[in-house]
Image 1 (tube, helix red, strand yellow):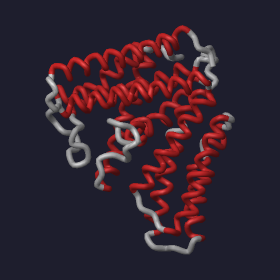
Image 2 (cartoon, helix red, strand yellow):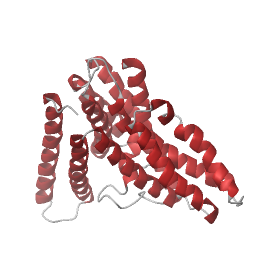
Image 3 (cartoon, helix red, strand yellow):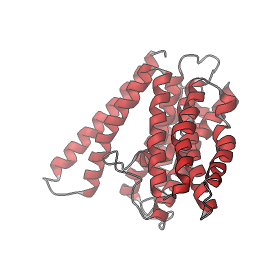
Amino acid sequence: MKLDRELLWLVGGITGLLALSSLITFLLKRRADGQPNAVVANLDARVKAWWVMVAIFGVSLAIGSLGSVILFGFMSFFALREFITLTPTRPGDHRTLFWAFFIVTPLQYYLVAMEWYGLFSILIPVYAFILVPTRSALAGDSANFLERTAKIQWALMVCVYCVSHVPALLTLHIPGYEGQNAKLVLFFVLVVQISDVLQYVWGKLLGKHQIVPLISPNKTVEGFWGGVLSATAIGTALWWATPFSWWQAGLLSFLITLMGFFGGLVMSAIKRDRGVKDYGTLIEGHGGVMDRIDSLCFAAPVFFHLVRYIYT
């Protein structure tokens, strides 16, 4: 994978932003004089977790497209595990879950690595959709059958199918942009994730009007618009790292930040339904893997297919 100057600028900018965040967090902790502050503690944990995640993400990109596929494959595996843990299953589902974890998930990412778009795009929506209820029915357990199979199918769609579209960006053959798709992945992840962070920041600074208090009381109108518009502006400013013009980068940034918000909201609704705060505890300050990639789930397939249909 070509490591060009623009990619180095992107990586350097992200590193600088994290360094600045670490400095701000350090100063806020000094200002608090050791007194407990939930907001500062949360911010400190988030920044530390981001250092780890950015380092892992950077190593995967440096290895090449295969490294990114493997990274997101493991992320999907752990996210699927967290999702299934929140939705209790019965013994009749165990063999179905074996297929979901150890056959369907690796096969999906194998198809991405092989750039087999025709099968990658329908494996889970079509074939896994048929496989899951069939395998569960063969177990002979009809108790809550529709609910159980729907949970497994939904988990595969969200945690595996949707997430696999992020490394699939590396397989796109965009005229005049050959060998530069790593920047496209960085652009997508950066815009969606920074929108998530900025919605949190704007919400803490100006948030007064809750959007859906019964599902996510921390999401406010002010935080939503502040984060979405700020992230859209950042995405527009990064047009030079993409195959888009500045206004196209702006429109796509606005769209994926909206999709990111919807993804986070839906995943919050599931947690609220199950009565938990986080999907897991794997990442300090962020909960589980699913808590960190929830905003990518809805945004990734939309971004991938728009870029594929318009630019390839």
